[in-house]
Amino acid sequence: MGYMLEIQDIHKTFNPGTINEKVALNGVNLNLNPGDFVTIIGGNGAGKSTTLNAIAGLWPVDQGKIIVDGKDITKLPEHKRAGYLGRVFQDPMTGTAATMSIDENMAIAARRGMHRGLKWGITKQERETYKEKLAELDLGLEDRLTSKVGLLSGGQRQAVTLLMAALQNPKLLLLDEHTAALDPKTAAKVLKISDMIIQENHLTAMMVTHNMKDAIAHGNRLIMMHEGKIIYDVSGEEKKQLKVSDLLAKFEEVSGGEFANDRMMLN
Image 1: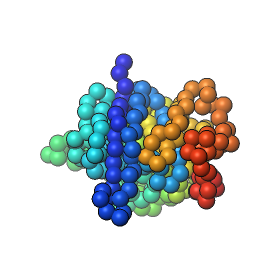
Image 2 (image 1 turned 180 degrees about the vertical axis):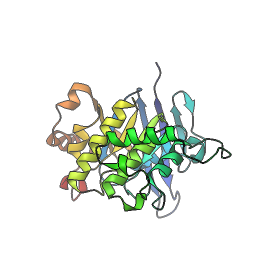
Image 3 (image 1 turned 90 degrees about the horizontal axis):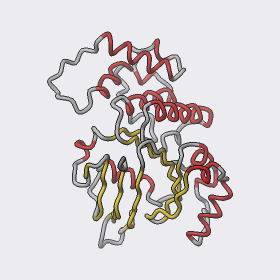
Image 4 (image 1 turned 30 degrees about the vertical axis):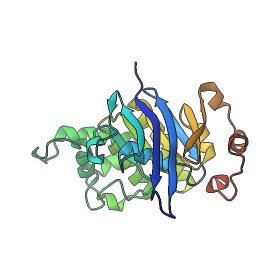
């Protein structure tokens, strides 16, 4: 079986040739097997979210290739990659339409990439499916299908966004600091839901986080980035044995510096 994701030597520089030039990605290479759940850590500006944006096609890369499930998507525009990817952002408000009901939001996600001429009505069978999936979240949302999403809490909204992102079984689920805006208790609940959705749907996932404990506790693989490069890649049993102090020591060893005043230290 081949890789689900192949990133081959990708580079990205923003504002090249100006005083604001920023080398964001500097030769990133990464292969993910089907079912890998990778957590990504690193200091501010390390290239974590930029890597996810490159995969999502937010802008073209300067060099290199991005291959998803054997298909080269490097030159595909963002909207043409939507069928391959599910994505959840940091802000719970961005993944859902606040003025629409929960079932309407889920129906939009279920129809993503389909022909626009399809009838809009939500079938009884679809509602039953949404109800079952919402019940698994254990947030009482299965009885609120017709509630406006804007009335939900941030954690509830993020949980619904996760469900929506996984509805079409994407090749790759991208989680970009998706619990950073939530209080610790809610964040823990949303992470538990993330684990459940990834495992149940056998998804391949990447999760950017500033929280080292979360990076260690979730997923089967962890990568550390610094200055647009992957400087550490650990998986399996070795990852399970990691402690936060190990990661800090590793960063200092590889980068020659410290996470001084970095948000990661505070988590």
